Amino acid sequence: MVAVTLWGSLAELAEGPREVEVEATNLRELLAALEAAYPALGPQLARGVSVSIDGKIYNDSWFQPIHEASEVVLLNRLEGG
View 1 (spheres, helix red, strand yellow):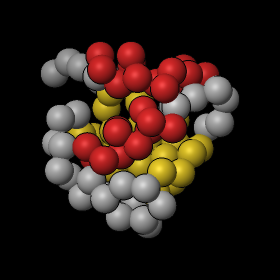
View 2 (view 1 turned 180 degrees about the vertical axis):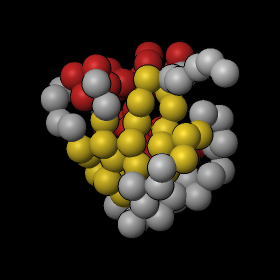
View 3 (view 1 turned 30 degrees about the vertical axis):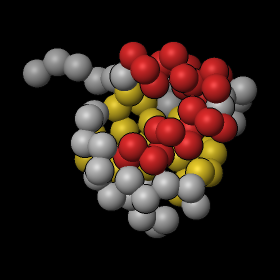
View 4 (view 1 turned 60 degrees about the horizontal axis):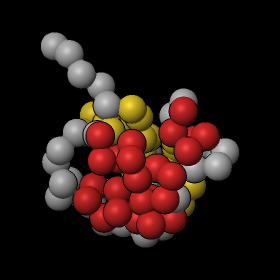
């Protein structure tokens, strides 16, 4: 299981918990598991989110590995330069 911290309004979409656990070994699996467990997150996930894995931000790196000990934070999509 991977512990995921939901940042800001994303926690509200997951019905309140700031930290949830899902089964995932990469970013794609993580997003699919979050949507399955918390359907209200689905529209935001479809619009796009950023995921911090061990302090590095990923947006579309679907096969980025995630380990059980990784620090994972789900954020609204970060954009800009």
